[in-house]
Amino acid sequence: MCGIVGYLGENAVRISAKKLELLQYRGYDSAGVGFIQNGKIHLSKTVGSVKNLRADYDSFSAIAHTRWATHGNVCTRNAHPHTSGENWAIVHNGIIENYTKLREGEFVSDTDSEVISFLLEKHGKGLNSVIETAKNLEGSFAILALEKGSELYAIKNKSPLFASANKSGIMFASDPICFCGFSDTYYTFCDKEVAKASGKTLKFYDFDGNEIAKECVGLDIDQTQSDKGDFDTFMRKEIYDIPFCQKRIYETYTNSYLLPIIKLFQSADEVWFIGCGTAYHACAYGEDVFAKAGKKTRAFIASEFRYSHIFPSKNTLCVFISQSGETADTLGALEKVDKICKTVALTNVGYSALAKSCQMVLPVLAGEERAVASTKAYVCQLTVLSLIARAISDRVVAIEIVDKQTIDELSGVAKRLVIGFDSKELFVLGRNADYVTAMECALKVKEVSYINANAYPTGELKHGFIALLSNDAQVLVFATSDDLMKKNCSGAQECKSRGANVTVITTSEHEFAGVDEIIKVGSYIQSVVFAQVFALECAIKRDTNPDMPKNLAKSVTVE
Ligand code: M6R
Image (cartoon, rainbow, N blue to C red):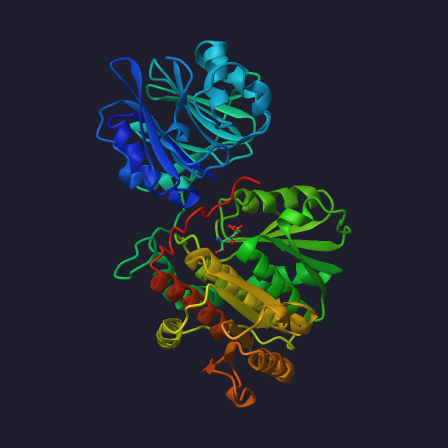
């Protein structure tokens, strides 16, 4: 996690700090900038968001960092940049796995990153010191190193890093999104590469010091949806983007576009879906919908799968689902199988490491998602999966496009429902595809409102967790599958008879007599959107910031 930016050119501090704001999705525990003034390295740091960072300094070179704490608590001392002498300042994204071995002598911070500035000082000056340092490091690292003389260096291994240049300067960043408005082209670092920016010159090297010729590529980033406009939060704005994004999916995934995709899915003996968090829930939905379409299928949590003893056969198709395409665990899972079977990335970021490493990319087409809690990307992932499954078998009904009026209505209901919600604990139930929604609802509620919401398959009630129910328990039941309506109904009644307050979100209101509240939705996908607006309203009621929840980051680029 963490976001890094470096700039060589006029107004380097202001430009770096401004661009850093775009990287706060990678973490926002602390922020800092390092720059040269009067031939000396200076640092400015703050705890919390970049907006608290003092950046009104004149300098021709700067490096900047927004942190998601891995090693060392959140405080100014642990905020980047780090220095270990007078000659070098560094910012780092990733984890230096051999840092304990490298920590010799006095260190100021508790971070793994400080060993980098320590090694740079130890190895002396210039490119030689950068390469020697890089060779000593193990783990994942995107590093920017500022040398006293104004030169800027970059090192990359396993964490994302990009560079771009225009006639006024040279920029490095964790995400090419920073290059919007700066240049139309950029360079992508490969693992074990170093770059040196000096004056107007940018050069790339391998870890042996050999210069590398690198081609730039065109910048194609849609930032049209990155403003929250009149909405109170990005999360709400992004839920309201859903109709537009789904329409774009329907326009893109036409019959002819789907042809090679269907061929690939049909030729596989099995389809496995692999992802983390909300993207894992999309995997679980994929498992359900492709089973309906008659495929052998499984869903895996990437962080578990990558270290498991489960391996695909060569005729398995592994579909990796990730909004960002940079999730370390998902990339780790891909690394485990990519020599064995065919791989597909279902991702929202076409230039991501996942997209680049899989044999086929299915675009999610959700546009930029800023809120940490994924909403529109999730609905888009489900929409794409349902369209492919539908193209394979007419036993599947493709997810329909949700309209604005429905979102308005569901939001109104959610707002009213949370008024009576005082519970610190929430039980969310469902079966099969509705259990997937229950898991997603519980995750979303936890993430943005910090209520301890937990999902259970309705049928598991009597196997244990019913022991937790009493008069003050709050239960949500998702029930949209016709064939499981009666089963969900019994589950709801069992909760009711233990005194719990039960709300059912269902397509069939007639089944659930006696529960406390029935919320009628028109379809499965409407129940998913209800789960999202419900979580958002829980956050609003509890006055938390749903766009930047505590302890989280949007892109989880470390294990
Ligand atoms: O970028 P990815 O889809 O790979 O991210 C995976 C999870 O980290 C992510 O879905 C996380 O659970 C979200 N914060 C959910 O809202």
